[in-house]
Amino acid sequence: MKIIVTGGAGFIGGNFVHYMLAKHPSYRIICLDLLTYAGNMETLAPVVGHENFTFVKGDIADRAFIYQLFETEKPDIIVNFAAESHVDRSIEDPEIFLQTNVIGTSVLLDACKKYSIKRFHQVSTDEVYGDLPLDRLDLFFTEETPLHTSSPYSASKASADLLVQAYHRTFKLPVTISRCSNNYGSYHFPEKLIPLMIANALNDKKLPVYGTGDNVRDWLYVEDHCSAIDLIIHNGRIGEVYNVGGHNERTNLEVVKTIIRELGKDENLIQYVTDRPGHDRRYAIDPTKIKTELGWEPATLFDEGIKKTIKWYLDNKAWWERIISGEYQSYYEKMYADR
Ligand code: NAD
Ligand code: TYD
Image 1: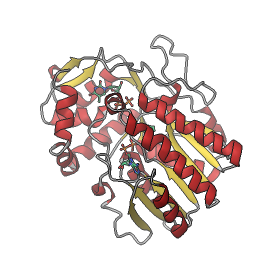
Image 2: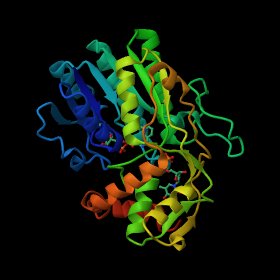
Image 3: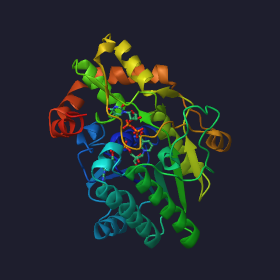
């Protein structure tokens, strides 16, 4: 089995590469990544040199390059993680989100069609469903929830999902889609809530909570997302969407306070800052379909996963300190200086 993993130098894709090489030692994994600001070869350092692993640098939106790669490698499966993934950046500059998330996905779909690939799996997000009200805890996203996006990021991901479904319907392309809730764990880029708060708290910097901190996210330990995708590409039904999430809802404030407590810091580090425009209130996944059809269940609950994640950041300071000492510093200034 030969799998091209796009975006494998990023957070979830990198974890997926590690997961698949450990779980399926006979599979060949080709990681294709453009190495944008979010891609990091240090995330792949543990597998560089592995006999079944190859890294290729390139853009999923570069048609000639993608066709050439498919022609040479003749992959069985494509798992598409490659994306611009940060909501705040999409508010600052939406265009690259359309270029990578929409055009890039369409180029991959065309390549899959041209080379009769056995499976194209699109890694999507629960953000395509928009948000849920904070006072209706009985509501969850199911696969039938209408797409209703809030940010340029989620709009670009929803557009890609629609294209994937159109290629299935029109060209009978063998596709699957997973829509997962917020991930956390190792190799998470420190612009996102959990790693940003861990890094800032360790450096005794202010912890910028948007708005009131009451927004709710449904947190999934990244390895549980990897196990779900592994199950879907092997046993999922063609043309289907699977929601992935584990009923681990927390308000942002609860998450930040947990990190403060675990690190023995003081809550006066919390600083309430201007809210994100269009800020989604609550995400919450109903994972019934993947549980009943594929037997998937998350192995790690939030209280345990957050401890493991904090330990990883303590044990791997070099990985994230190098990121926050580089170009990231100007991003941080721009986003948070006048907030
Ligand atoms: P990330 O930003 O950490 O990684 C994205 C990777 O894609 C990076 O390595 C980057 O270099 C690469 N990339 C970007 N543009 C590219 C291009 N044009 N060609 C090739 N490679 C390119 O993102 P992540 O958090 O690991 O998310 C991965 C996927 O999972 C995304 O599609 C995202 O929408 C989805 N997702 C993320 C979450 C989450 O909580 N992080 C939840 C659900 C779904
Ligand atoms: P984020 O990690 O950006 O993921 P997403 O927006 O895709 O859910 O943010 C998670 C939540 O944390 C979201 O409600 C915004 C909030 N947040 C803050 O309060 N402060 C921050 O500095 C960041 C990055 C996020």
